[in-house]
Image (cartoon, rainbow, N blue to C red; front, side, top):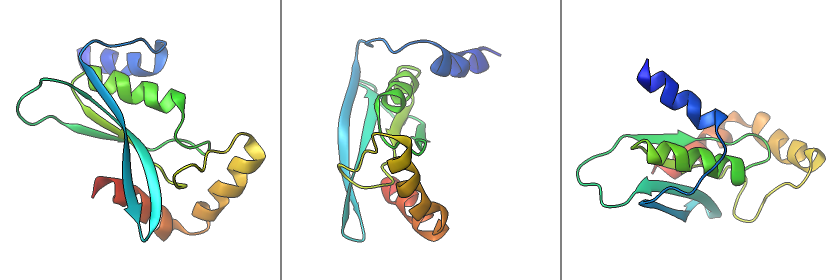
Length: 120
């Protein structure tokens, strides 16, 4: 029950600054396309930690998903937000987001490839 409450709090409470948290952009490539996700983890933790992959909605990597990664990291996970669209491709409205998302809705292989790229 405690874990369920902790996970629920990830989505309900506003973002706050967490002490001992390391966050940074994470650059990687998929078949020559530059991508830039977001990585969050606790500093000064020894040993292995579980990881969580966060795949954002059609608006891509942005503040709310970074906040989710920060909260997960504070709970002891290494969290990474995947960049599906590419470095610098950040839709600013639903029309642009729809156009970007359609590329991946019609090509599920490419979507899987982008998600797997961040894990590699």
